[in-house]
Image 1 (cartoon, helix red, strand yellow):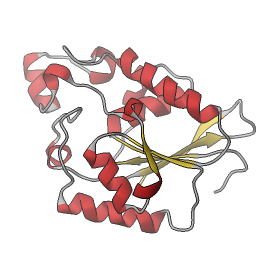
Image 2 (cartoon, helix red, strand yellow):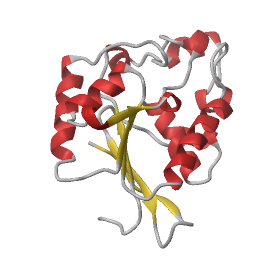
Image 3 (spheres, helix red, strand yellow):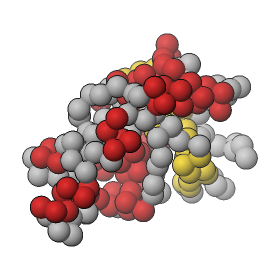
Image 4 (cartoon, one colour):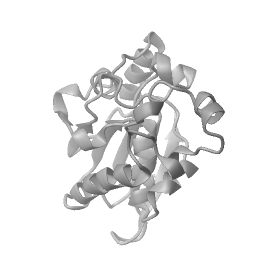
Length: 193
């Protein structure tokens, strides 16, 4: 399913110890697990034969290592705006642990104390989208789950909170694009393993 319009490939980084255990990993810079490294290498196979106008990566080592193991490290430009959500006081905690202290909490609605609000992440996503829409071509972006979910919501013109409606597995590939013309942004594929 190819398109005559620009496409943006989104790759969530490979597995880390914290992603495997469900811990919120925003700015803590932890490495990929061996399974995460293997999944990142497999991304190269899945993207084989594709060419990209630009490759962008989050500054985290989990995203940049996934990018490198997928074979795109030499092309990658690091963009600070692609960093994962700053979880502040909730960094390293699981959702279950947070809910024990704060019943009813939802990341995409409530944000994080001493961290980012949903609107903060949405503003960063809007900066990336603005850059993408100024350039014609196919892009490849390596980042983290919650940021990419907000990016997808904003791509569609939805509020950042709508990112909570999308799920992304580690080492998944998703594609943003257009339908009939450049005024109709769509999700062409989502969370493919």
